[in-house]
Length: 250
Image (tube, rainbow, N blue to C red; front, side, top):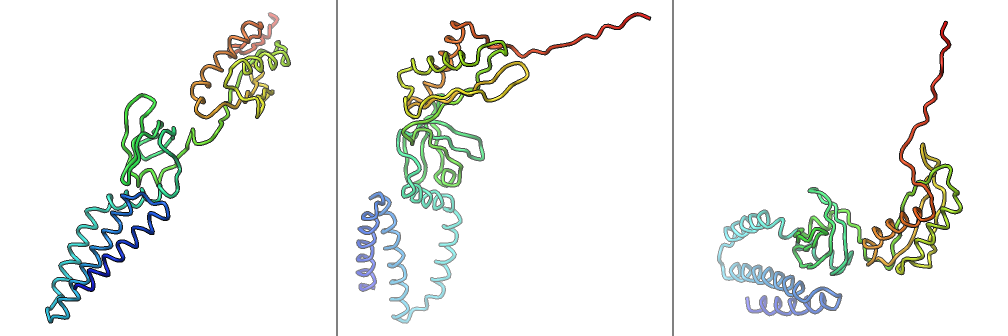
């Protein structure tokens, strides 16, 4: 029994140091190494009793039943714990990043304010804080909206068929360049995307810093509308041209 406890303690220390050396959180390394210590200590105790002539069959059976019951009861906890470890090593986000997580209950978008071994907490755009278990996060489709340096904003702007396309392009580019957070590289682009039923549709691309993406998306759209209005370029309503055929009375 004493030898088993000494071996368990040595393995616990070695495992804890190894996990920390590979970048695992100190609290996670402590919990895992302690679980391993208790498991080795249990088997050392059973082996010691068996060596002393005690029939441990019933003890092993009871221990197996207890372990199975605990395993079933803590399935979600263990799953979240392991998922938390995988997320730590995978690093799909960091605190402060704005993420979009698609779960069975719907899509959650917001800023990550806390991340533990069992769950993360996301402050949504409405201001509420949502707790999501790590097993749900690890198995979900996640988009990190601010984990990159820059993001592209895209619009479809319709102008009337009677408007000058080249003039409209220049006006929209002026509107984009007037915004201080619009990046010069990659350059903003405006080009004809489609000849629609009632408008010539221009596709607009502009890159901004990822942290300014949400703010810039609304400001730039307003500026494009204001610049087009000042230039006298029409953004038409949906319309139909109806031809009436006159019938001569017989």
